[in-house]
Length: 75
Image: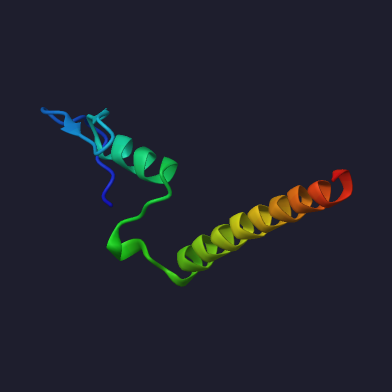
């Protein structure tokens, strides 16, 4: 995305209801919500997204394991 240093005349309403007054605001919002433009989907970006999904899935599986283990011990 091109970085323009000046603010726009009209604010842009983003999907979550907040507003952006410059391209930098939109880039900040996209980075905060782990989004990227279609042209930015590089191999590194896809690898990072896949890694984050696997990390989340491992954490959920471990939490389920601990929950079931505690149930087994205390029953």
